[in-house]
Amino acid sequence: MARDWPRLEAQTRLAVKKEKVLADVRKKVKQVEKQLEKTLKPTLENTDLSHATESKDSVVQAKLSRKASKHLVGHLDPALQQLAQQENHTTSLSAQLTSEPMTLEAVNEDMEAAKLQLEANSSTLTELIDKINPVNREPCVFQTVLRASVESPSLGGKIQRLQQTGQEQRGRLALFEDDLRDAGQERDRTSPSPWFMMQTHF
Image (cartoon, rainbow, N blue to C red; front, top):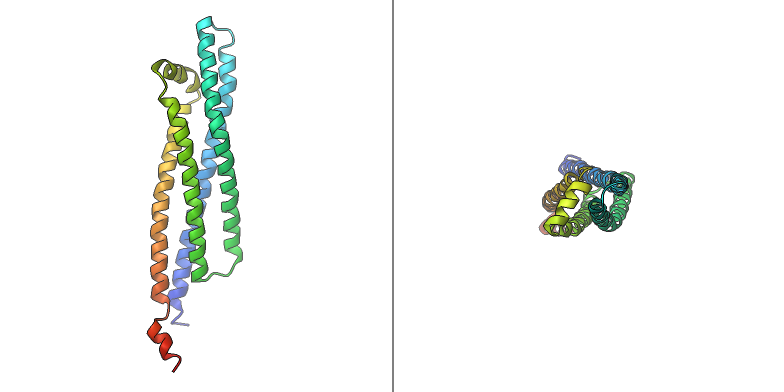
């Protein structure tokens, strides 16, 4: 039993660390979904209402604003669906972890699976940000209309937080890779050496 204690301690430490990372991933995905849904859906409605009685120039601006908003929504809705699917997959993985016996090999495999899930989340966020950025590179007049009509519900701030979330995801991915390296080193340290295995056969 004393000989098995380092291995059991390593399993417990890795399991706790893994659960914390998975919880952070789920929390971030939900935050992104809520921010986007809360910001984009009312934007179209508010733009239509606020410009209904304005002058001809304002109507033109409203049309440009609606076009920009629809452009964003058209790219963001598929990304929201991807994030929801990834959240469901992460939840399923977490449930599986609590129902299966814990061994060092199982912990390592689950951490690999969680790493792949985190990479998928980061990829989705990066793709989403890349689709939003072209809107910010439109001509100056178009940017002015966007700021006046679309950013009224703080869309710019939401997008900035989304970009920060993507950076945080990439940072978590780097930390997760460090955890995997530590797990591999711990596994190698606690595994019997080839010389010891040979001696047990004589």
